[in-house]
Image (cartoon, rainbow, N blue to C red; front, side):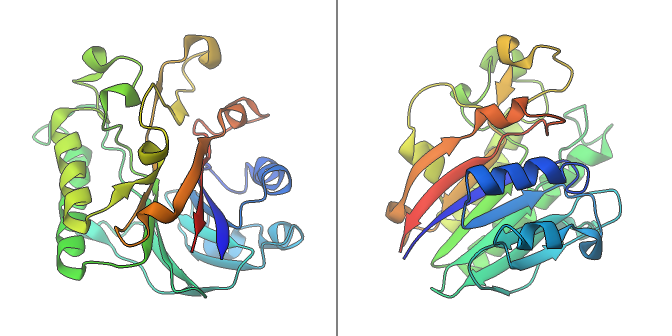
Length: 262
């Protein structure tokens, strides 16, 4: 069985319903994981997505904030969610495909503006969230699993437009990168995107603050696709659909894709 999976922080699934449909029509991933849906589950425009072949959805929602959804052309089963750091936020949901693969969809807290938990509660929440992710993966030791989502960290020097200038900027600070590395190591996760594209600058997010984001190209790779060791070699054809950042009323994130042969 071969299937293509995409992950995309959509920044309001209702506001951006037209470009979600555009992605479904033009790219047609078998599984589409969305973050920051900003919608109760019953308000997600599922009928529009069903009309394009996405008959299955597993989601957790909140009014106006957070929210994660897994939309699929393939049958999926809801296998739960976790509330790391006890934030009460809809930031994780998991679904299992018929072939036994479990997809974990995450929206890790952004962490606010200052990388100091003493003055910025949100940064502390982010680190605590990652710590609890680490502990869960260490305890559970998942198999046949894929982790996707907006992890809000660009870990490598070539995952940001300027490593030196962003070292003290939330999303690329050493403490965040270290926490993310611990999460990866605890679950023995492999970075599918970087296994496929090992060299070169690679971004999935460009700030709304840049009027000409494309020319300025001050991006960061905040969105990720990982896999457990038993299926990491099944992942291939990774890509980031940069063009979607320029669509009408875009998200500030671009979709990330990978195909798995299982």
